[in-house]
Structure formats: structure tokens, C-alpha cells
Image (cartoon, rainbow, N blue to C red):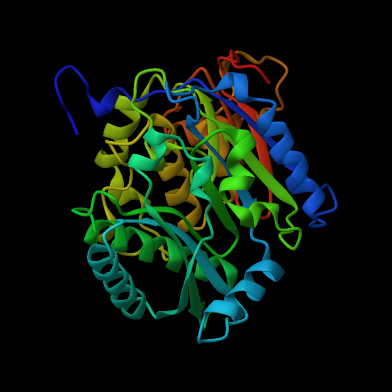
Length: 362
């Protein structure tokens, strides 16, 4: 919301971030513990409010801990989880009447998209680790388990993306409603707490049954925005350090060429447009764009290098085929230029990269 001299179009951050992955893909709680310790070591990279306990935002994006989620779902859901299922981490209004209406809207849209709600779980939290400012804006935090008859992972990923966008559009007037993650492969835990307090605020993160093989982590320093729970990172795929200084052009081009993103997997792109938000941070916008490309069936590595290419034009010794690859992509997407450092995961791969300016710590 614009007020006075503040403009949501100018949202940028300067943060700390990282990624840890098991090279063999073996999930463990030790990996999560190490990621939390690493995040805590980045406390100096983030901001802290005058109350001494409210952070600018920190969080984790982890490969879906299937065994843990099936266990807690069995304890809280009336319906067993399907072989392939999704899980959403959602911020809801503290007013139960408003939250109940949002849940009903979500259930209706799930049904329309051929999905069903196995059940909702109130995410355990300990508000003793929230500062006064964080408490003032603290949402209800719940998990939604989503059943599906799909047997193809890509088809389910695309269906979940379309469903989430339709939910977001339907609930756009509910300013407290926010979907942290809505996926069959990853889940996000984040908030306006200090890194050392994140596993205390979310007891799930201290539960040794929660095992994962990939963890993206982020500590936010908001340079020109007021900290808000939804703006904490990671987002649904990535965490970002730096700025996207071409953000206005990137957002405009995303709107202008929206119809060009239609594929067999995304046949009705107009029903989920706009594809990229204009009121969130620059980091959330590039996350949106990456989601669109992946939901449409694009390979992850092509998608990230289409968005954030190297300075291929001046690399005399680059392989000719690789240079042709970048030249071809440049005709379809302009670079999202930083300086920026990005870490991300889709639940299968872990990626870390710098943009072509190369001016972020890495």
C-alpha cells in the first residue's frame, strides 16, 4: 500500500543467505541443525527492531520431510494422505471468522481443480520468542495437506501452482492471507524472529523426526521497507541477497508477454494473471517468474539461466553451443539484473548463483 513518500515498487533488501544440501540426497536432521546454526551465524547480516527481539525476517525452505509430515498428518487429519500429496504453509487472519472464510474458499478452489483437503494442522509456535512488533502482526500459521489422484510429479506441481494462484486472486482482499509455500516438494518456515529463535518459535524445527536433504536459509535486512511476516524469505523457490535493479522493466515485460507463457501445462494463463506481483519485494517477483517457467514445464537449469544469465557476450572462450543457448534465450527473456546472489531449490536440485555483475558475497 502506498502512503506518503513510500512506494511498494521500490522494495529492495540487503541480506544474508545460504544453502546446504546432502550430495547423496540423504535426508537427516543433522543437515537441518547445521542450516539453523549457519543461519544463526548470519544474524549480523539482518536487521533487528528497537524491541530487541523482532527481526526483519528469517526462514528456511526445505525439501519436503515426507516421513515427518505423514506422521503429523496422521495425528491431525481425518483423511489419509495420498501417495502423491502437497502441503501448504499458510498465514491466516487472527480473526477466526475471517480465517474460516478463507479456509472455505481454499477448499472450494481445491475441489474445482481436482484436488482435496486432507486436513488442516495448526503449526505449533511459541510466541515467547516474538518481540512486541512481531506479535502485533503475528498471523495464524497453519499447514494444509492436499490430496491428489495425480501420479505424475510435474502434473501435480503445475496443478498446485495454478490452484495457488487462483486462491491468491480469490482472497486478494484478505490482506492477512499469505501462502508461504504450496508444493509437493518443499515447505517454508519463516517469520519476524531472530535466527537463534527460529527453531524455538517453530518447535517443528527442533523435532529430530524432521529430516531433510536440502535447506535454503535467509536472514533479511530490509533497506527501505517495513518488515512484514510475508516478506521474510525464503520465498517459494528461492532466497535472494542484493537487488534486482531492472525490476520495473522485468515486471512490465512479464505483463506484456504473459500470453507467451501459455503451454500445454498452462493453457489458460489469463486466469492466473498477473504472473508477477508488483507490491511485494523484487526478490518475490523473480521467484514468481521462476515459478511460471517451471510450472509450464521448463527445465530448472534453463529457467534460472534464462532469468540470470552470465555475461556471455564477452566470453571469448565460452563453448559455441553454450553461447548459442544464451543468445537464443536472450530473445525470449531479458536478464533480471542485480547485483544479486541467489540460492534456490525445487526439492530435487539445489542451485546457487551470482548474476553477471558478480558483486554479491559468495
